[in-house]
Image 1 (tube, helix red, strand yellow):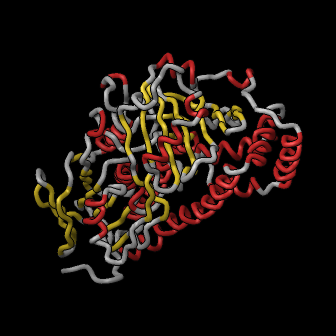
Image 2: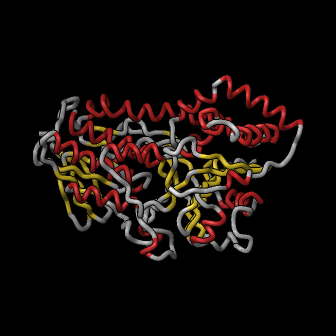
Image 3: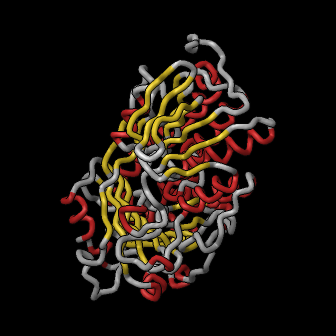
Length: 461
């Protein structure tokens, strides 16, 4: 008998779940669904369909991501029993270097517990040696396997609703009926179209094109030119909202976010003196990046991303604007798993218990859009950038809890806090007054700001 509209549907012993996509959101859902079902004494099975093999080098194992994990997320994962092995972490990042046309300065982590870590989502860029890189996504899939999930390394070819379930078809696995289908395929157009076909009221997420490339310069050069500092650029260049260089073990990852990044935008950014000054002088940046791509990211959440026996998570549904996509995968994957196991798998259940989590992400992103609008305005103003640099440099003389601008900027660029939290801190009267004063002082006595030698001291994670 077919499911009735608005009827509560629950998982029962022996039910099967298909997770379409083995990236972080799919893995987090699977991990928590199996963990929660054990607590609930519920016997279920999970098949994870993933087209990529994360043990492969280059495009075959790539998941198109800058690969930053905030300390906030590391702590949450630890609380849930997920400890990231040290060999997965490419490099611990405990400072970031802020670059503008007027100069540069280093901003330290607000505390010793708010560092960030860089990872490779796949096994590493094209051209690297297999034993020198470690895959974060493969680590998560391994945890799911230990919990009992079955990983199927292939794409699905069809998804259709049938009586009391959903039929998933794949080349190797054939046709198999599932009681719940979880869409975790990111923004893969073909797969997303099949899953959204099961949700007739869905409005897909809005996207924009970004740019990611991996520069190979060797461990010694990464150590000497970047150390443990992520480099962030506030340059007055068209279409770029955020640009960063993220040090890893042998590579440096370039991430450009903005409005539909294209070849011209990338060339203008790489040609800037601020970028070239970060790398060894004899390095030709045009030839040093064997891996590069223009992936799409979610900049506006999908609407109605669930139905009876179907729920979308991660980038397929809701993410965090411009940062901490892995954190959003954790939030949506865990929330969907908790709903499915404890509350049910009907549209009504997902609407009541899962949708509020997605709405909260969307609300936070709305505040984030305003913050990046202001950031973009500052990028175009020499006067404001002089004031910003002056204020951050002088905050280094203060105690950590009094570095108001530095800590707010740290969280904007690293994803260690939500946008609403950051926005309220920017409204602090002390911060605003100090910023206005810095604008006046810095532009009365204009100079190029250089990194203080003491700030160049770097530590490892």
